[in-house]
Length: 145
Image (tube, rainbow, N blue to C red):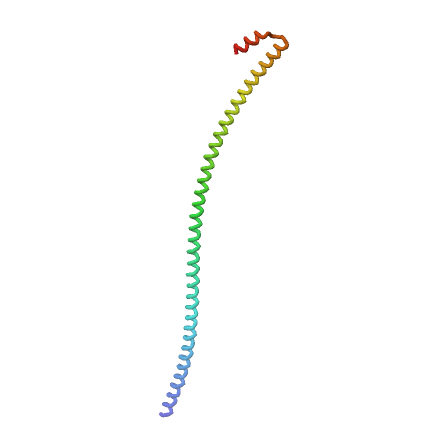
């Protein structure tokens, strides 16, 4: 019976050694897995930090664009005001030009009338000088006008 017990103990011992070896391998696998997980955690922490930096950059960019938009709105209003002032000045200039045109037309009409009067007076004086009409007739015509 001692032989059987010894063989049984030997078998248990060899199984125990196999179990110990399996547990040592498992421990090494788990340690490797733990190291992989720690590395993954570090990578994810780095990614989170990168994304936080990116988010901060985007918020800063958004603020810059908001400021730019406000500046452009102010510029647009300034240009609109200047355009309206220019339109008002142009309207005044156009009205002044119409007045000038009207006055110039009146002056041209008066000039034409005066020209006609001067022409007819010149013709009368020339006829008088030639002796076609008398001085009395000329004086009567001028007085009548």
